Length: 162
Image 1 (cartoon, rainbow, N blue to C red):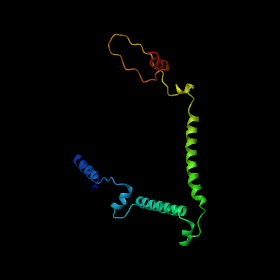
Image 2: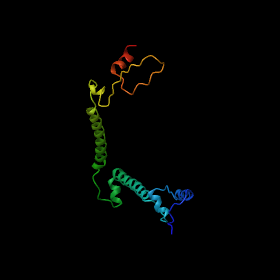
Image 3: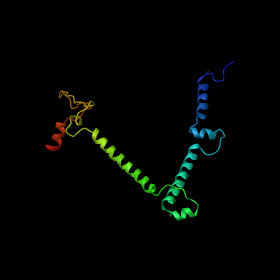
Image 4: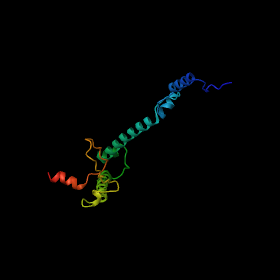
């Protein structure tokens, strides 16, 4: 006979569109799994929790290793650990590396910027010269000028020749 999705009249089209609109879901991809009956934490929540716990535990172990005297560590049975030299060197190396990366980034930006005397600071491939259109003074209305760059001579006159 007729398929259930065939459209015969505007009313049928409207009722089908209402049914489709009612079933639209705005859930995230993680939420769709929980909507189908799968309950529990999302993977992103688990990774965040495990990452934060790992960070705290690692920081505590580092601080204990760096600041607790060796005799206390030997008393609780910890005898194999890296030299205390690395407790100072690794954070120092990390901070110096970050400072050098910042200096390198700033230097790279200075190198890629044209000098103030360069013509590229005034004109480039996207510059537009203003069109000189003369309109007769027949009416009071004058059309808006097209978009263009303001010439350096007009800027200098406006700033320095008042």
